[in-house]
Length: 319
Image (cartoon, rainbow, N blue to C red; front, side, top):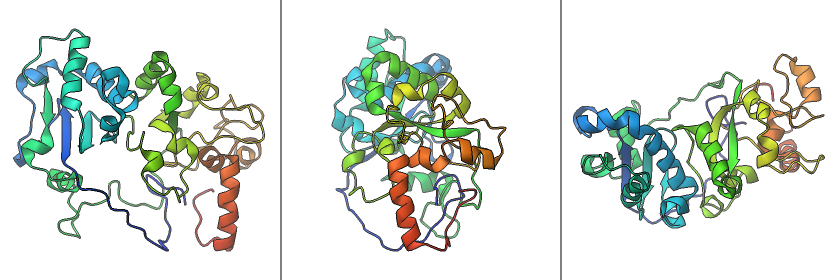
């Protein structure tokens, strides 16, 4: 089943636990705190500066994760931090956010800023021991399982995505090619880029799963309007379209909907017309599954599917 945003389901047949060394947790807030009894909030002076600081905060956070060398940060320190959206960084172990942010402000000639540079160390102040502790105490406690965080969004039979957007995987290699490419990526994502994976994805597990090469090689995943991506002709610049028999993976599987899909089969630079019927789209356009996994990898997954579930007990909406 296609996962993400509801509408995805399956049965766990085996479980492998890979333990990692327990490291310190820090949650950095850029101008936004955790209100209520946790009492981690920005100062009035920093709140007043947010209209000026927000574009800088967004650029710094995304650059720290995607191209850390531009802010004087090592790959290891960059890989220690991630972000699922919003102006926050979730860091585990050794990182260098505090010093890098201060240096970034100097580079941008920003000097009129309060002590601490409006950077909140939320985990340290509130005493969060890990991400789950933060989630529970910040309001995501599971009402059925005391002391556990709940899934958000909740599982659903249909996806939360309306269908006119898709999660585009911006390749790390393409972003790192030039500052112009980084600028394009920053313009697309703003503070809502999905940075839950990155430089250490290749070594984070045994890779015995269905994640595509595009997902493993991505610098960021961006929830973007499909038509605009094609109108700007970005896909041929980011991905290799030279082999016309094999469409490459370009999308993440999160929030895929019945209207999601790849380009026209006749011209990979043109989007599949949304006004076409499902039957015509299936005939004339690259499918959602093929644009997520790529032609070669999808064939392998479909072959496995036919062996383990020949009667299609597990299926997804309009797959």
